[in-house]
Length: 96
Image (tube, rainbow, N blue to C red):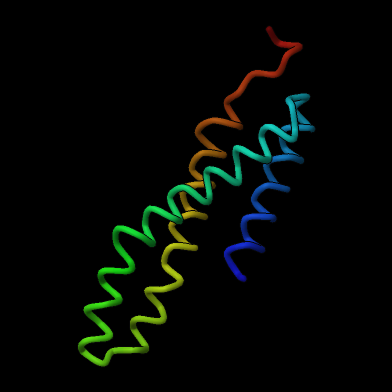
């Protein structure tokens, strides 16, 4: 639930920035959602799930629940990184 709300907020953030820079807003909003969900999914599948299985075997459920939310933070960090490295540096159509 938290991840979905954060994805919507990131897409809205990308959309509003793109519209202010006279870029296609919906395309950038979709790009923001992709920039969030791809690393989120990969981290969850490749890192968090195997580590959670080990923690559950050790009965460290508190740590496993924190690790479950780590994919949300990784996705958000990558989306912010893409925002600053790509969207903010994209030239507007008037400047071409």
